Amino acid sequence: MLKEARDHLQQAVDLIEKVFPDDEYVKAYIIDHLKIRTGNDHGFLSGDLNIDSLIDRILDGEEE
Image (tube, rainbow, N blue to C red; front, side, top):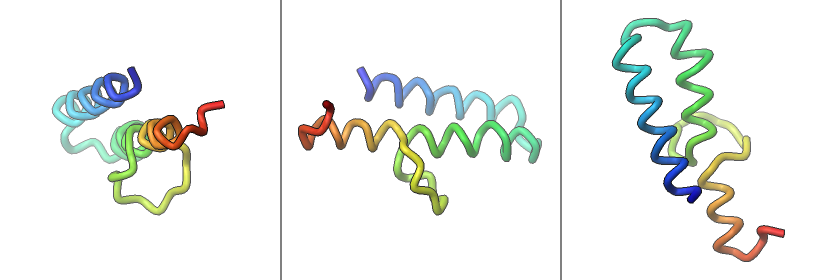
């Protein structure tokens, strides 16, 4: 389910970028934040928890 949620968030990011291609405000306050929450490959220096981290915790047996 988490992988599906990650995919939906990525689709949302793609759609927002398509609708607001040159809007730096939207990029800074919506798109960048969603990218950080979506996965580890966002390219930002951030230790924030994201869906990929949750998937890793489950795979490593740390979900409790």
